[in-house]
Length: 321
View 1: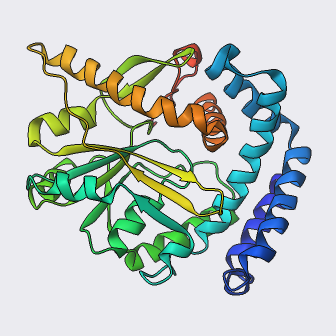
View 2: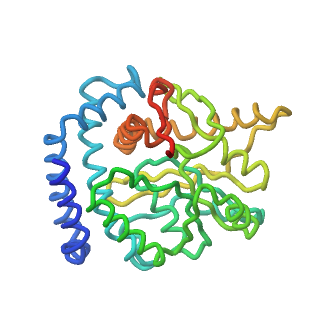
């Protein structure tokens, strides 16, 4: 099955890409839904894993039937997000709104009004990549903070597709920064630019346990610490697919930091506050997060990344050498 998926990805990204991006969405969407259903049926382990992760996260909040629908919808969202990746090097300011639109852009303008930059803080939830793409196309100076790509153990085709996408970064209307490039991040904020980051990335330091629905998750306090040191505004953000198929890029009001004399306590309190903001969106659209939960679990199981949840603490991170 992995060989079939790799071949399909190559087929879409190389010979068929030019054709697919020109096809009407009314034609493409039903075909993508059919493909998602195929993978939902053909990949029982992934289907079971997504269902398990959603059930563990939400506990008794949803019935078995509802969890089944969420799992099915998770496949649909994932396949359509992969399709949208084909456009990222080709989207322009003129056609951006065919794919996504901002809600709360005034919150960003207000935050930048302080002259200390802004941090678009989100999760690997829905089409989160569209934030930096959209802000860059609207003329904002934006930077995406990304972790080290997981290419170890990947197939030849996957690595070649990664190289292809890497070459397209030069065409993006934003700058890509590594999570370890701290000085570049600070300098960008001093220039009153935007930093985009997903807080559930697994490369962050100083992981702190926080209650996340029915589980205990570990998130890095790095972004909270960065905001405290630089005065940059934290803008909780989430990408949600609307009823018309376009993505609502929601920029919440600036998160006011809870003040505390003890630095570690201040970091923990503000991390909890941010996760609380994210919870309301995850609860409303759990199918936007199901595949991420499964992917993080499986990558942690292989020792490629740190686990997200305390109940996966038995997974061991592989070390170089």
